[in-house]
Length: 428
Image (cartoon, rainbow, N blue to C red; front, side, top):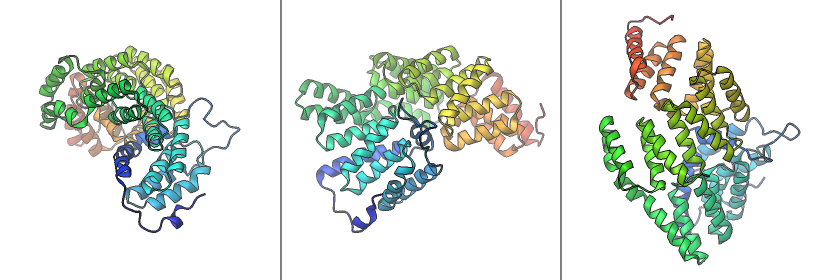
């Protein structure tokens, strides 16, 4: 263990201009690293072939998750030295935890004076989690800062393969190719970055976002259709449109936009994930299974894909196939929110309401954004009602309606609200 505290008790010197330029990517990466539960759990436990531990090897200490959470809290509170010391002390006990190594890399980068160690930690994170956008982006940025431009270009190219809409990767790659005197590639990357530049992206999406904030979802969907059809937008911007479509429940438009990105970048995992989830929510279950199959071809250890396939099989009336996929997802990543949501759906269908409630709430506690989908909120309301949680059930039924629940489910949600307000819990 390296104790960073003893050597760093004095205040850190003001950042040089070059270091200041490095701080913007760190802030972006920190947001990626610490995003509520989902990234921390899902990417921390993803493993490439040959990098995961077997029964013959030492497993990670059960306390790794708590260590990661505590270190993240220390870092967020400004105690960088404390976070570095804690993570360094746990490295040996968490050799397979990609997220711990990635967070250590970020902490060391912020601490200053430990660039080689930060680089090594980021490299280990990419080996453990080859599908992690944050890990490859951070490793590429650190390699570029060390003027290892050939390797930096490779890492940043891989980042873009995973996430074509990543502005930081495109803009950083443009600078790297410029240093390598490859002016053609530098200009191509700069053009892509310009297409994704945050202020331009905000300007393009301003009307859509304003309509969403005003609660005018029908008008927002019309604006979304206009953006999708306007002058054949670049596939990188299409990915942003797909995310916006997902946020307002425009599943068909999200699937269309995501599919166009997948066509342009067939090796990119992020657009496949967006597309699969849009297809699932759009009731295109067989298409969802096909997209998840493509994702598994790229990321054979994607437990997220297995969990989504489990949910699709449930919707298709194949509980046996669903259970197989869900068990595999939970075996690979025991804390994966999507897998626990799928397990909750499975148990609800079997009439095991207490277990269904426990699984669903564990999923939502780790990733509250899952409940932004109307049907997930409706399912949660049903499970809570059957478990006797009247007030919470009402809240989720109301949320499902606010998120655009329609048809027979919407009518059932309204009836449930009236029934629960009257104090009558359904025994059906």
